[in-house]
Image (tube, rainbow, N blue to C red; front, side, top):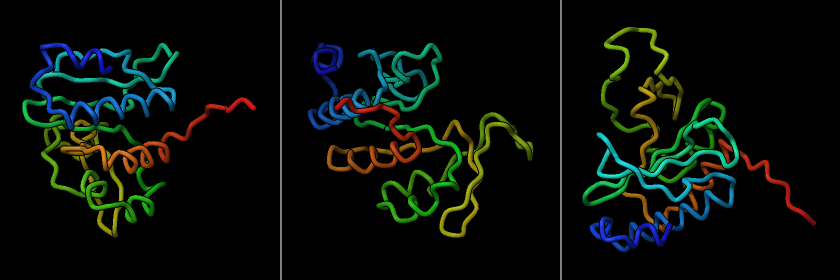
Length: 166
């Protein structure tokens, strides 16, 4: 990934954000997820985007994405069954909790319908949240210092099934 980010086209990305991307990439690879070192178009989310899928699986389900924008990054993690890990989220640092409890834009999918398959409903700190899965779990301006907490959260939702060889 470091070599990809060294290309002139990515020269606008700050040193700190390059460090975050390469460290996150390495952590994900260690857990069995890959971006195949591909940085694609960002569409409406930013200039560019990195998508992480499970290594060796044909399904293209996204587990994480990094949106590369003009001046910053957004880390997006994909989670379900939030209530199952409610207590862990409630004990997490504020920058983790914010992705679950912050202000979210209206759902783009349901157009005001009460029952929408794109809604995620969960409770954090006795507050009920109903959010659109397209806007969920965005971590704005992630830093290298915060990376251990992001990885801790990721592994809680996706426990490693890798077996160490002894």
